[in-house]
Each structure stands twice: as C-alpha cells, then as structure tokens.
Amino acid sequence: MKKFFVFVLLLSAIQADAQMIRKRSMLFMNGTAHLGTGEVIDNSLIGVIDGKIVTVSNALLTTPNLKNFDTVINIQGKHVYPGFIAADVSLGLVEVEAVRATVDNNETGLFNPNVRALIAYNTDSKVIPTVRCNGVLLAQVTPRGGIVSGTSSVMKLQGWNWEDAAYKKDEGLHMNWPQNFQSFGWWAEPGETKANDKYTERLNEIRKFFKEAKAYAEELNVANKDVRFEAMRGLYDGSKNLYVHANYVKEMTDAIFFCKELGITRLVIVGGYDAWMIPDLLRENKVSIILQRLHELPARNDDAIDLPFRIPALLSKAGINYCLGGAGDQEAAQTRNMAFLAGTAASYGLGKEEALKLITLNTAKILGIDKTVGSLEPGKEATFFISEGDALDVRGNLIIHAWIAGEPVDLNNHQKENYEKYKKKYGM
Image (cartoon, rainbow, N blue to C red; front, side, top):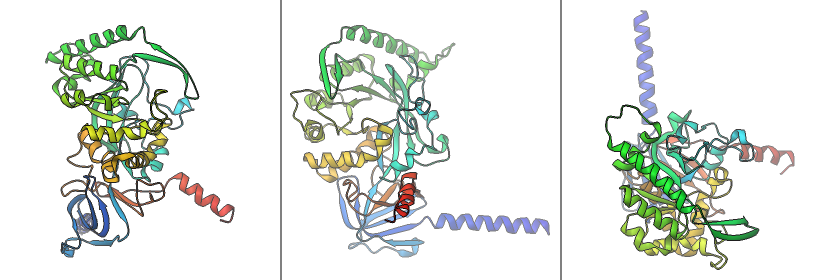
C-alpha cells in the first residue's frame, strides 16, 4: 500500500512538471515586433515553446495553429523587443560607489588576468532589479583597475547565485591601454594636457608580460602552473576576446599592431572615441568597438559639441562593427539608461531600428552569444520583453512583461515600492 501511495505521488509530480512545461508554450499576437535585425513587424505573431522562439511572422499573412500553444495573448498596441544586453558594466560588483565595502570590481596590482568578475557577481544586488525593469536582461560584467584587470563574463540578470546567472563564463580579458597624453583638472575646470613621459616604458612592460604569456601558452604540458598565464591561454588559441580600453588614435593604432605582433586575433576596443577617424585600419584588422559614455561632453575643446552623440552614425557609415557599452559615471546604476543611449544615437543620424541593434544583436555578436540571443528569430531563446511604448524613448519605455529563456522576470524593485508607499502617504 505504501509503495502504491509513493507511486501515485511520483506520478502526480511528473504530471505537474509536464503541465508546467506545457504552460510555457505561449503565442503573442498583434504586437509591434522590433526584431533587433533592423526589421519591424507591425502585426506580429511570436510563438514560444519550452523557452525557445518557434515562430516570428506577420499575423495578417499567417494562420497559426492555436492548439500548439497553451496561452494566447493579444498584445495589440504593445511593442516587443529582444532583451537589451549591456556591455562592459560593473553591475553586480558595485552597490554604492561611495561606500568602499560595497565595491568589489578592482583588485590590487597591475597585472591580474586571473581575476574573474564572475565569482564576485552579487545576484542579490538591489541595483539589478532597477536595471531589469528598463529592459536590460543580460550584462557583460567587467572588472576594473590596473593594466590587466581580469576576465569578464556575460550574466543573466536573474538567478539565485552566480552559478545560476552565468550565461557565458570568462569570455574575454580586459586591459587598460596606457594614455599617450595626460590631462589634468576635471570636467568643470579642465587643466593642461601634456605627453605621458612613461608611455613607452609602460608599453614595454605590457609587451614583456604578454610575450611571456604567449610562450607559456605554447607549452602544452607545464610543470608549474601559473594562474595568471593560464587565464590568458584563450587569447592565443582564439577562444577569448582581448578588450583593450582605449580612446584615441595613437593608443588604438598601437594596440592593433601590438595584437598583430603577438598573434592575438580577437581584438575589441572599448571606448573608441576616435574610432571614426581610422575606419580602414579597423576594418582591415577586423576590430570591433564598444562605445562608452555616449552622454558626455566632447573630449577636446575644438570638437563639435554634439560629436559624442554622432559617433555611432559615423561608425555605421564607415562600416565598423560596434555596439554601445557602459553608461558612464555610477555605471552600475546607470546601466538602466542603455536604451536611452541608443535613443540618442537614433536621433543623431542612425534611425531607431539601427540604434536598437547597438544594444541587442550587435552586442551579442561581439560577445559571441548571437546564436542564442540578441534578436527575435526562430530557434533563439525567448529572452525578450513587452513595452507599452517605444522602449528607446524615456516617454514610452514602460516594461510590463519580460522573460529570460522563457522564464518570467520579476519587474518589481525597491524604487517602485517606495513610490507606491509614499504616493499613499501624501494622498496622491
């Protein structure tokens, strides 16, 4: 009798699991789908089964088999977008920048390729829900500091711990290229700019370190393991990106020839303020760009006041592979504004669907995750959200539902809770 009772319980559990899986089959009808590829479908059909997108089509031209889906949702008047991807951010590593105990994005020392942002990622950060509710569902979490900062990983912005949240582990190594010129003062009171006397000396240190790492990588059976050089093997076998943080022509050019000298084939420049000035060199060497700090003042006194806003259009015109990255000061909290950086680029010569690619498909391609996310296409994971209006416009960005790989995302956060709390207090 006991065995029969256990069998019944087990059978019930299996049936419950089957029902849960079956409930993940959803069909969204009549929304405006922004595919992330540059294409828009006004009356769309988007079918999801077991966390995968199975169909994306025009509802006026296709008759779906409703029996294949447990839930059919009419989203007429709403907009559907692939989940935004934030590149080069310290989200989950920083809680309050002014409180040192909550900042875990910078290791002591100059050469730390073995540092992994992955294991410091805090899934319980209160900043993450505030970012999620603006459509950012994946992020490249990146260490800071030193010359070689460590390795970044792509994380889902949902999970119990970093193991749950990890999407692509240790996908690239980050280094900060020395500045050829040093500026003094600050943005409100800029000081003089002069050549960095130690530029060549620092460059020689970097070259020596990377040559030692290359020699180590060529030795397959190493008796005494070096954790720093082990972390750099992927640069020389082509399995990892090298992210070089640099902004100006001299620095970027030196970084490109440095990588050619060492046989590093996957170079991504982070920053890239002057990238539009050297398009031929970037194309010839297949260098991608992650633009930073789009909302900022020009770097030089004689630059056009709107140059930072126009750089995306200049890069697109030149045929450079690029995306948008970190949002600037207080970057962890400001990651929520990725959509509005793209909106600014759209307003300055790019167009909205091209701008959308800068935080979806283009980013996914650079990070090497475009086979599963970055656009609304059959076969990809159901990582997308529904907005009441235009998600790239602060006036229309109102996310009402979101999913990561078909799993629903909680869009509540402490800021929304405080809004509701104090709205009642003052009788609004």
